Length: 338
Image (cartoon, rainbow, N blue to C red):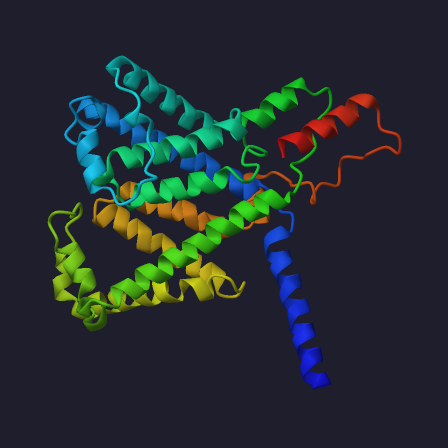
């Protein structure tokens, strides 16, 4: 009994240690900042296109009025500012303000309040037009939600540039933080769950078992943007690509974590989602899924590619034993930004 008790105690201790290390190890916000840039840009673009026929979707005489949306929605918590704003002029003004919020998010200007507003606005639009809600919008909202948690403006942002302009000395590199790690981890876990359920749901269809699912996709003229019907002459290729796709989705949540298999898993995401983007006409969806997969790219690799350094890598800034007051202010400002 003592042996069993000791084993359980050790198992609990090790589980707790690994759990805390997974969630609460401070990390460089470089990866989070890159995701902020691309997510903000995608939010800006996907809401900019509403201008093509804004009144038809959101006006007082829209195709789907408030009563129709209320009748078809399945949740009482589908809040939207469109339910309380009736003035057409105010609706237009709020729409341009929303575009400004998304642009600020991409640029990293006033990032903390803007990230919260971006999430609320994106969800508000999704609740107003549920019949136009697709995977792209769901991933946009998912990434925007987690960007609220971490210091996504601590790197590669106008906030950091403005802070540098106000500082008398070079700004210290971004400080690794727990909130940056929590934000990235939530993106990673959420993405794993998405792929797992997507893969399992595909297994309900016979086409994924007999290897013809890819052909059914590329032969569908409704989504076809590049003619790939020549693949009919290569049935073995269709079978292989179909099975590798379903195998990748189902195994993603397990193989993306080990360092040995992670590069292969992430690299396979590129042709899969670019194929969706280029061949099936879902360009924005394919791109935003690659942005979500970017959460598995290490901050060190991001810094190396962009030619910048994190605080942990910085060895050139000497901190004196009794720092000058202006240096203390600069370090404190850097921590606030992070």
